[in-house]
Image 1 (cartoon, rainbow, N blue to C red):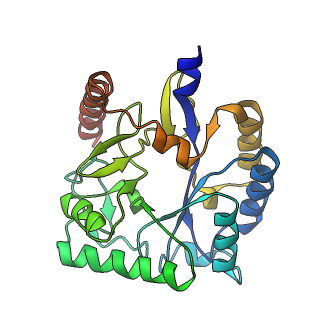
Image 2: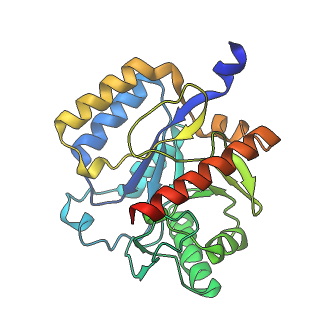
Length: 250
């Protein structure tokens, strides 16, 4: 039982955090997390130019708020550079998600430059960063090379039941679009709070209250990296069937 308990948990990953966003519900989430001592990953867009997100309310002192979250022990991850989709993967992105991308298909120099510009903005605001996840889950091999070149060696995306190491990068798997805790394994969810209404928040609040003991933080997820034969083989099977289903679906 202790083995299963140590190796079961869900990491909360918030996407599309930017000065323009659904601040009413983000404030509610912050209070909820402080109440239950939950430490999510928040994916911050350093230079948001996404026209849809720019329609949301603007919050002054955004970077001061992000710095406050980091002081709580929340993981601040880089979520792209400007969140503008300017290429089409045609299902050739590394994880076969398909759709449009900010990074896929561009040269190593181009992607490295974007990441350097992202890190510069965080540094200017005195926020340390070490982790990354790309808009729309879309990467190519140049993305991974660029990440290593700028010192970002942790990605919150991938396949498998456990965090793992590949290409010199630590990956924390993200398999589902809904909050779901598997009976066994360490996963990350993804949360798009900008599309929520109050009813969605109440559903999320109930989920947190029911499963708070199974919600883990980023450091714990990293500590459960598993590159054993079982973990690698199960990751291969999950990757194979998910890639196949995505190819068939599209």
